[in-house]
Length: 167
Image (cartoon, rainbow, N blue to C red):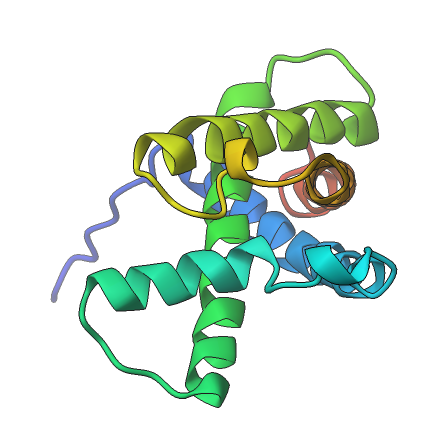
């Protein structure tokens, strides 16, 4: 008779997956907001939004040729993936914060914006860095990240309560 071997998952695994699901899902309202607000920007600021600019620059740096539908599909997948990975980090870094989930998430979202648009993007010399964008586009992206973070916080809190029973 074969014995079943079970290996317990590390303590961070389930919360990390919950955060990834919440962060990926929160990318949808964030993206919808970005697309809606992009339409009200002045004409001279209506070039591609940062996720598309970043994806285009990555494909260019990798010497990969893509057409517009491939670029847009890749942009959506990369944006959802980045949102999910940041959601996973949200669960890692904010579990001990004693703030309401929407506020905790919004603050984390602001940190994601700062770390990305004022951190690694300018350090890696990406055109979409916040240091290269006009103020209105930066405000659009900051609000989008506040939305992402708030939604991530609420979804992660609800999922954690339902799946794990944590408060």
